[in-house]
Amino acid sequence: MRAVIQRVKEAEVVVEQETIGRIERGIVALVGFAETDRPDDLGWMARKIASLRIFNDSEGKMNLSVGQVKGRILVVPNFTLYGDVSRGRRPSFAAAAEPDTAEQLFDQFVDVLADQGVEIAQGEFGASMQVNIVNDGPVTLIIDTESV
Image (tube, rainbow, N blue to C red; front, side, top):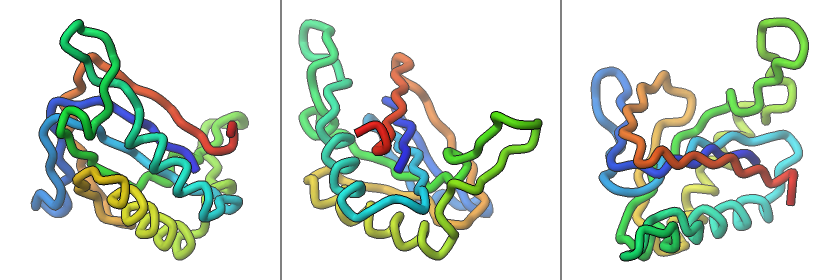
């Protein structure tokens, strides 16, 4: 499982000109799934994202989690995170989970992340989405369960 995490001032997901998910201060998590992902990966990633200390404390140091600042998380499915461009110019998505598997993993991940006590908004699996983000910092991290 792979996630690109961005600290945001606000963000929204729009599908067919309708906003389906919106947050103010918080995290946008673009998430992708590989064929090799296991249920344990979902829990590890959810705990990691919810507990990341990427928000500033009163001294301006990144020392607070999204829950501590009463922020929210916007979770957006993104299979292109497993695009391999090491050969040629067109990405290969051979490492990405098949759509049915990825959709199940995405739905499970949203539930597991919500169990961390953080309010969640989400994108729509398989939809053409426009994601509008106002980055804060910017603070952007890439987290990969394969490195764990």
